[in-house]
Length: 182
Ligand SMILES: [Zn+2]
Image: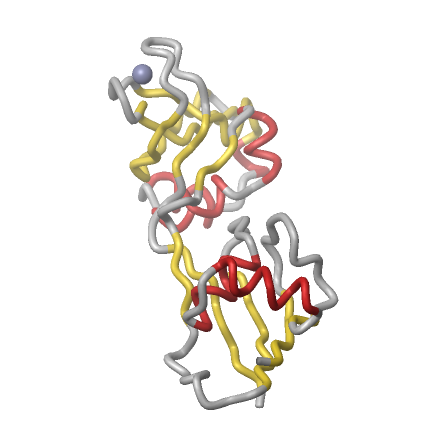
């Protein structure tokens, strides 16, 4: 039997960026956009607030783009301050590179194991799906999902009791499967 676990975002991640006012390194998106149309050209920014001093910074989403080349649906979402769009744009590698930001997902996700009970089983086959590209240590996920300590999971990995095509050291942010033999 295959268990399905999901790594779910619970809120927007923190935005890692240096504040020019107070030198703090973290910002929060509040889901607001600013759109400026000038004749046929449009600029759009995602607004983020410094977590320390509250100063506003603008992350470039569109820069002097011909308004006709922008999908109407995207324009609507920008004007509506769509929170889902904020989440998508923060995870967009192009937006991240252009604005030189990173994301901190530490307290912004949870593991949903579907409430299955693993205690009386000798072998566990698990498919882990990421609902967003959230970098997480597999050892931490397996520990949380199975109710074990991280040290116990590390011992099981070292013994070869956890088998996966994915690398279990470091962090993963895309779907993987593993088999655990207790
Ligand atoms: Zn600041």
